[in-house]
Image 1 (cartoon, one colour):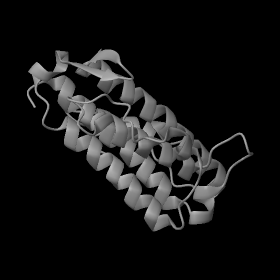
Image 2 (cartoon, one colour):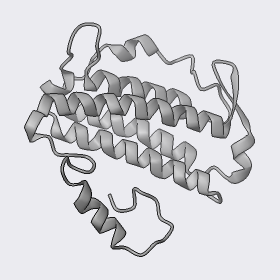
Image 3 (cartoon, helix red, strand yellow):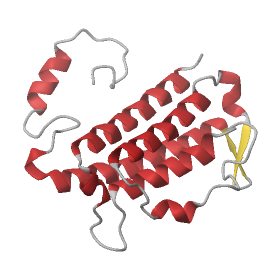
Length: 184
């Protein structure tokens, strides 16, 4: 990868995957499946939707429409997982597909046109679209996880009341170019 955009977006995606991973680790299988009500989604359903999206969007990313004929989007909102391990295996499969598609991209690829539902996007636009989509849903997963775990929740970022300590550690380091996720 030759551009700071591509390396930065990979780090951003790795960061959001890590937030999802850390949330999933803290939850039991029953908690992963908990829904606040019938109109809402559980962590596992949100994850299943992300997985379906990733497999559809990133399989043959540069050569096929991102909305594959084999995708059954409505089925993504039906929880069919039988255990936490099956969910995690599926989760990892989606992310592997994504990173395998993005990692070999070059600066020249960024302006190529790809399609999602016959709508043309530059590669950069398509990546940004998915980054926003994934961060939106992973935020939902984190919110549900915090709600379910309560006071036993292990913070994924700066814990409440620890901002001054965190800033002191950051400002104690010499100025330099680095990604904010490098120390996580």
